[in-house]
Length: 392
Ligand SMILES: Cc1cc2nc3c(=O)[nH]c(=O)nc-3n(C[C@H](O)[C@H](O)[C@H](O)COP(=O)(O)OP(=O)(O)OC[C@H]3O[C@@H](n4cnc5c(N)ncnc54)[C@H](O)[C@@H]3O)c2cc1C
Image (cartoon, rainbow, N blue to C red; front, top):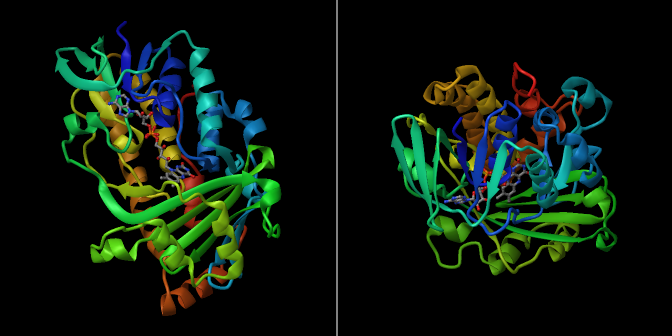
């Protein structure tokens, strides 16, 4: 049996490799970087993906490095007032069966990698950026930047936001810049001065900005993320999203929120992108997964979660279709398209909603104050998760 090739060994690529191996398929992961690794800090994981990680056999191994917040809190960044919360206690667990947790990206990737390394069906190649892709009959041949050539029975492009595989399948050029810029920083927990929400995942929303804070690594460190929707970007000006614009936009916020800005590093920022939902990610025996297929803004914290769900569904469809990879990939795409599109479009909406000012801010806060903390209806469709027929 020929190998299934996967371009990209990020969260999505490794989850897909593990899911396929658990269905008895041979897989080769081709990762461009010299080592498997993740850039950035924390990542939020909802109950929908906790279930997927459990199916993949890695959830338990992630627990020691995870933090389980007691609530998701939304506060107004101008007043520091708590507006609403989603309680993550008993009612949440009873409804969704799995807990919500946060984890360092590095620890999540390490858990997936350890799972892959235990499977003899999986080969893991680093320094193997995929350069060219040729489909012929019942095979796909890829040539890597290092000169190596691999012939597989199919190719999954899990090569991220700037996916070269996507360009060979859809050819739609660069992703859309949202004009949102993110600054992050992790500091030892004891440096945090306001400890009133220390056990929560808190989001402060304000005009053209928001700040996120939650603890990582068993509570040893605090992850701090500040995002701005750049006014300079909207006006087409220079230095959009630069550190001085971060200060400028946060200047109106409550002193407690401004205090948190001390914890984010100005050394680099992340420029956010997404794409309009596509209607076909598959060409013959090549398909896309994760950010390569449906990159999203982070406002529902679901990009990596969608990538992991993709991998589980893809493996199911491959197992059901025998050697007919095109049938498997079309069925996979059909099942994933609307759910991932809803994440992309809802994330844009929530990005707007938390950044409003004036009367819109007043209305947002009034509507949010009326929410039932034990019924997170906005994300219920997400957290309820997907139907997975077969045990992996
Ligand atoms: C600020 C921010 C916060 C976020 N927070 C969350 C969150 O809380 N929860 C959540 O679920 N998601 C979150 N996301 C989204 C999440 O980070 C991404 O959706 C997720 O990492 C996508 O995984 P992926 O495996 O598809 O792509 P990537 O993680 O980008 O992995 C792609 C891999 O492919 C490799 N590669 C690239 N080109 C090639 C090539 N030619 N050949 C071979 N390999 C190649 C890369 O080196 C990389 O290892 C956030 C994103 C941002 C920007």
